[in-house]
Length: 89
Image (tube, rainbow, N blue to C red; front, top):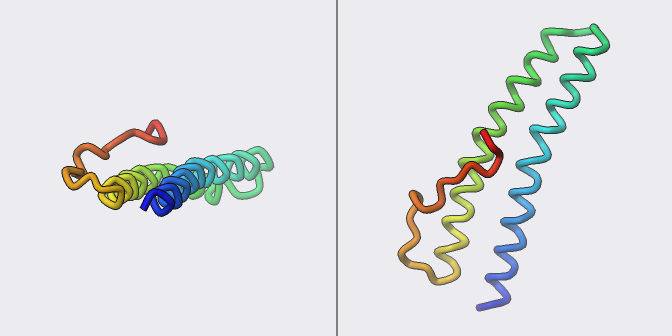
């Protein structure tokens, strides 16, 4: 059972990392497009997309933490305990 817990914890770390990096990459691309002056509308959409991905990332990471906790035997795990601001949104 401990090996499975380690796998889940590792995957949770990967999810958390990717959900941090993806919005950052969108913001960087938005800044590049804005700096080039080529398509300000697209730059704005990408900034908005980065914000949306931060919000949804927080939700998905919270649920992932909840299920990892349940899988490791914490039957008292509730979604309220798992609400965090992982991405400083």
